[in-house]
Image 1: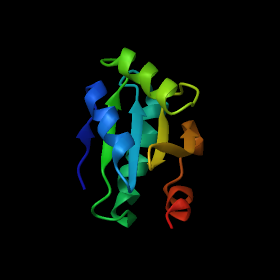
Image 2 (image 1 turned 45 degrees about the horizontal axis):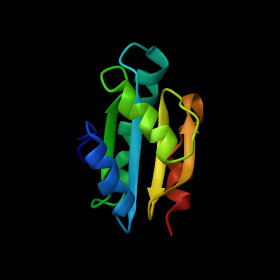
Image 3 (image 1 turned 90 degrees about the horizontal axis):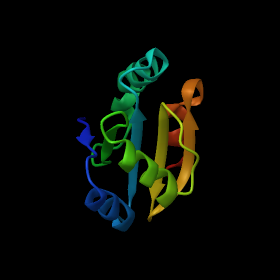
Image 4 (image 1 turned 120 degrees about the vertical axis):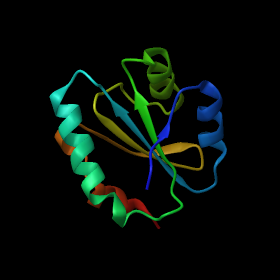
Length: 109
């Protein structure tokens, strides 16, 4: 699986219109906790469905977009943060050491 760089508001609109699941991972390139959470997630992501889009948001580089994600999906801004999106709604919001691929997988129906 590969990350899709989340760099524009147009991509957010696309994510909201997708009928299936998507994951947005918000990452701070200046934070060691964020780096550890990203590595832990990447070690286990082979358990995700192959067709699930995985979006990576560098929130230092795209701070305004990160704020828009928080607003559009009605979540508090966190870093690191994993959002599971289905049908335009955030159905799971995890941050810091609470990021768990196992829990995200349990939300897939």
